[in-house]
Length: 127
Image (cartoon, rainbow, N blue to C red):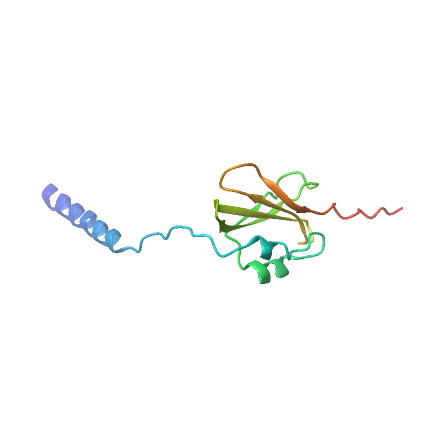
């Protein structure tokens, strides 16, 4: 009886290995043809998410720090591009209204470069 159980378990394991070998390989993340010229068309302080998507396409990664300080920008979209120095990352931070407030470039080597930033919208003061 024990032998049949072991035989059955062996069959299941071998089947799993066979299926795993036929699984498609995970594709390597490749940068799109995002250029700094395309990024320069984004107007911080007025461009919204839909306009950025129209210019750059769907982001490579999105990050939302919804539990952080509400004064800070919490929604960040990231894109990958390439240039002679290698792959770079573009980060676009949005305010609560979905307006781009800051654009930064993170090169493969070196410091982060803020490409454009807009002051936060003025808070309305009501009496």
